[in-house]
Every structure is written in C-alpha cells, then in structure tokens.
Image (tube, rainbow over the protein chains, first blue to last red):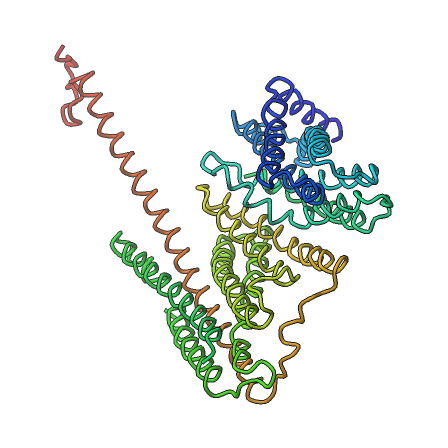
Length: 221
Length: 46
Length: 267
C-alpha cells in the first residue's frame, strides 16, 4: 500500500512539476492577498503584526482550496479516478498519496506566505518550533478534509465556490486552533508546550482519521 | 407588547408559514404533474 | 392512504399547538420577574433551537443507515435531505430569535459566545450540505456522497463546539451569562415552555413529512421523464433506421412485400 501511495504522490508531484500551477498561480495569489491585506488595513503596523497569525491561516486555507480543486480537476479529466478504482487500488493509498503531494505543495506555500508576512507585517517571532509543528498538524487536517470534499464535490457541473463552502465551516476548529498557536508563538516565552498545540494536534489526528475513512466511499460512485 | 418579543414571534411565525406554504404548493404541483403524466398509480400511492 | 391521513392530522395538530403556544406565551403567562416581557421569547427560542438539533440528528442517523449496506435504501436519503432542509430553516430561526433576544438582554445583536458561534457554523455547514446535493448526479451517487458529507458534519459539530469553548475561555472568561440562567421557570411558564417544545417538534415532523413527499415525487417525475425521453429516442431511432433502410434498399419497403420465389429484386 505504501508503494502505491508513493506512486500516486509521485504522479501528482510530476503533474505539478510539468504544469507549475502551484508555483506560478497559487503562491503568487497568496502573496497578492497578503499585499491586499496591507492596502485594505492601511499599513497600520501594530495592527497587522497582531492579526498576522489569523491572516496567515486565512490565506493558507483559501490558497489551499485552489490546490485541492486542481488536484481533482486533474483526476476528472480522462476519468483517471475511475481508472484507479478499476485497477483495484486501495482508496486509502490514493488518499495518502494525494495527501502527501498536496501537503508538500502546501508546505512550500506556507513557507513563502510566512516569509511574506514576516517581511511585510513585521510580527515578532518567539518560537519557530511552535510555528512549524502546528503548521504541519494544521496542514494535514486541511489536506485531509479538503481531499474528501474535493472527491465529494467532484463533478463537471459543480461550481467553483462549492468546495470552499463545504470545507471552510468544517475546518473552523483548525483555523481557530492553528491561529491561536501562531498567535502564542509571537510571544518571546512561547515553546512547544503551548496548550493550543495539543488542541491542534488532537483535531488534526481526528480530521486525518475522518479523511482516511471517508475518502473511499466519497471517491467510489 | 415588547417590540423584541413581537419581532421574535413574527420572525418565527412568518418564516415557518412561508416555508410551509412553499412545501404545500410544491407538493401539490408535483402531484398534479404525476397525475398528468398518467401514472395514476403513483399519484394515489403518494 | 394512511400516510396522507397521518400527515394531515400532524399538520392540523401542529398548527393548533403553535397557536396555543403563541396565545399562552404572549397573553396568558405572566411577565418574568427579572426579564419582564422579554422572557416571553423563552417559549419560542429554545424549542426552535431544539428542533434544529433534532433535525440534524435525524439527518445523521438516516445518512448512517444509507451508508450501512444492509439498510441501504434511497428512502433514508430522502429522509436525510428532508430533515436537513427543515433543520436549516430552524437553525436560521434559532440565530434570528437568539439575536433578537440578545440585543435587549446583552446590549448586542451578536457575541462570540460558544453556543452562538457553533450554531452559526452549523448553519453554514448544512447550507453546504444542501448545496452539495444540488450537483446533478445519479440518485445513488448523490445519496452516497451526501451521506458521507452529513456524517462528517455530524462528527464536526462537537469538535467545533469544543474548539469554540476553548477559544472563548482560554483567553477571556465567559462573558455571557447563559440564557435561561436568570429566568426562573415556574408553573404555567414551565408548562408553556413544554407546550412550545411539543408544538415545534410537531411542526418539524409535519414539515419533514411533506418535504419527504416532495422529494419522492420529484424522483418519480425525474424517472418518468427519463423513461419518456428514452422511449422517444428509441422510437426516433426506429423510424430513422427504417427511413435509412428504405433509401438504401427500396425492396424492403414493407414486410408483406418480401420477394416471392422468383427472388428478383426491382433493381
């Protein structure tokens, strides 16, 4: 199963390497949104630094939705998903493969967005460890739920705004807890023993399990 | 009567009445359509 | 036949019970010691909120029964959507009546209290469920996909609630006194509240029944239209086949014109 998951992940990464949609469209989009926050909130530095954690997770969530719809548009062309199912590949392998590829793209996106926020909004950074670990947990949760709803809403006739409508309310707990982690990580004394890190880790484990369990039924028609 | 109380009660009653009316009209229209389609057996069963 | 009777009986009863609740709540019960007339919202707001949760509970159970193979039937899917739609209406009303009560009681229309926030997320969550159902798919695929979505929503609700509770309590103490806490519920008020719960539950049952019927009839019409459309196409194909045949080989004009033993074709 791990080999098959790896094959699916490799396939998705190759598609990205060839098309460069994440690199040329989604990451620039995230940066454009960060700049827009700057204009809209009138470059009030103090305020921007304070709300930077929340802004970061909003930007990451919205940008990830593009990566997720992309991940399923690719499968829908030529009915590639049905092909995988017909070959009898375990949906679990497809799920973890796609999740690995998606998470990798999201990490790059997050690194760029975080660097952008540090440069543009100048927030204090207290604990890199807390930032990194909570980001990994939240990314896995966003990816899992995103993939399941991507499969559920995958259809020629579903509008572009359906996936965000489905995913955003479900992920509210992750946005809350990840933003709180990042908020705490701004203070000098912060560390990886932050109570919110525990919360985001638990939520992430639950969403990962839910995603792995639900992906099969969601994908097979 | 307290205006908030009036507002609360009317919000509930009006919304439910509108939704109920929509349900009744919709179901009557569907029933007519089924009868018209000639499947009287289906209309009678519902 | 009996279903129609039951539905009508439930409809009439719920109408009467709601009317009774309104009369009791607005005119018969005395104003509350603390909240005065405002407390009259007690007879609608909690019952409406209860129905919202009840409806989503029914949606979750029906979705689970659809996904479980031994009980798989489109009937459960129809129950799920009927209940969810009624649930969304009642969640909307919960938010509206809560807001209307909050304004005079707390001074604001909205506050990021755990229960309010959870209810708002719940509202959007099930709006999404209903939107997901509008993608044109085969009934079975749609049923399966929406059942999965409904179950995820069901798992998500307690997580959302916990996260919001922690969010509101880890940093600042709970600022909002819970609704019923300063309202002493006694005698006739308690009975009216109970009446409210029963009345709105009956309304829910009636609405879900009618909505279920709408869903069943729509499916029937859809199937019928598909059939008619298919028959039409078949007939069209037949006539066009015949026409093409005639053009290609005039000898096969009609079955009774089959060649006699001399077997000479006209051309």
